[in-house]
Image 1 (cartoon, rainbow, N blue to C red):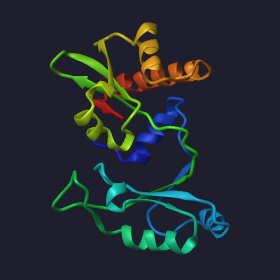
Image 2: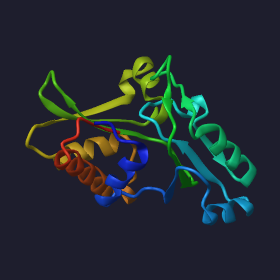
Image 3: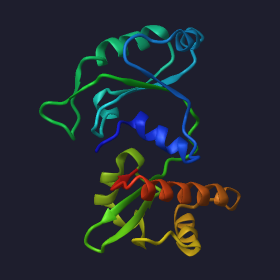
Length: 197
């Protein structure tokens, strides 16, 4: 089963993983968001489909005024968004996630997945990529960091430490990273996921 981004973020939040404040729109922009847009507060508008590449296809935009927000909603809702992952037909946009804009110091990639070949769980991370992780993996595989965890086990302190060093996590934020990783892994196991990124 595939989840939309807003559904995934609800799960993350239930496992004490911080997410940006957001709201789902399926028709009109709520008055609370309109008020902020009139003051030129920036929000990220994200069309909800089961495919990556939304940003490059016009399905994700940073918007700070009411007219652009209304145009985005009008153009996206009810349309079919085509990305490199769902060509040639695209997928219908029935909901839009509107999130607060947050300052990004740097972007990291993090995922947990099942490796059927080794019959283990992999935590896969990178200091590069984020939205471009496929390109990073093709061009520079040594920027992709992996830790293998046996089924029924949890990441060890050493594995968490290895990833934090490779990702250049500061000493000041190590505990936050450790809590994030442990909570994400717990979510992965308890909800019987096959991929989380």
